[in-house]
Image 1: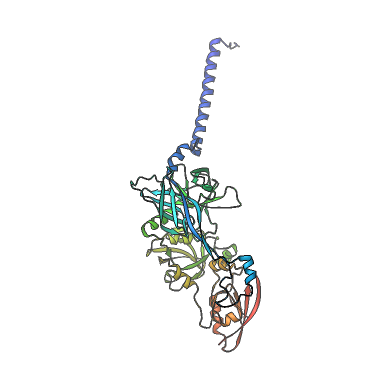
Image 2: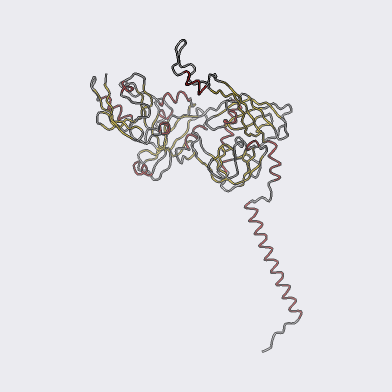
Length: 480
């Protein structure tokens, strides 16, 4: 059998083929790595982005008047009356009257319209006597408040621009923002103008208890006092959030108002000077794991209706206590924090479809959205349920009252108002007390409370079982 000899020509051909194979493989790997890097979108530098967005960010300084009280007992005694503790109080408090002084604070904002409209936080300009805006170029302007919205902590102010050529920042779509995206926070922390910090979106849809429309973006981009009202921008230079809150004891935990919410508020403040919100008139709560079984639900999803206000759109549309709202106007409702935002953003007078679960069965109802009237809603929520009320107003234990009075009870009726000099005041009962029993009969809600009152006999004392701040006791009232 003949042996194969490795001639110089053969060795050269083999070397060329192996080299081509190696180069081809390396090229493919580099291409794959390049494609992967492009998909992730890791920026080599933020300088071009910063140069693009920073000119539209402004420094906001405000001046407000603060009154400091003087002698706290200065006018406690009437004219001609001798103050037996006069020397004692004078030693500690002096005789100085109350005085006023000017307080200054700093914040941030950004130009959203070339005609001079600037978005910032409500708490930056609230109670301000004077507002000054300093632009990136160093020019200073006096600003006026166009409108404020305390529920979302947003405000719209305006400066005069002779040429209408101010640099602006566009809004992005915060609903498309994903956890892990790169973002920049720009503002004036601690008065250090035009500071830029970077980070990522840490979470979306955060509820931090600051108001009824919580839906914050969480970021680890450093945010500090003075950043309030400044923009949180993505890599396209779009504003996806307005920096507004921090966790004082946390590192790298900041919150921003989503741009989609800010867009709606901006349009209304610019056109009307205030925000008009939709309302249907229900009190809602989250569904606990125990409620899933009690209401025979498949999962803990939706907003449980705890109460329906009389004369409200919800009552007219057939919504009942115990219904679980799972969708509103085609939008899913995951929990009780979703529904207020969706309803508030719905156009007034629009008739929408609401999907509910009632007695384990799906049901579709129609409700016409009305305008929210804060004073009207408050007065309706504190309605009297009976003429024989002993001089007190009671209500269901709703999430509002749980927060208002720090209630631990979830059954019974809560006292929300007690008239001075009434039998309830003499008992003594006070707002925040929870009535658990009337005449030794359990009271779990308003319906049972009203039924118990109907059974009472006139001119006979009635025994109430009360829960107050974690302890319980009996109280006796007289029915007249």
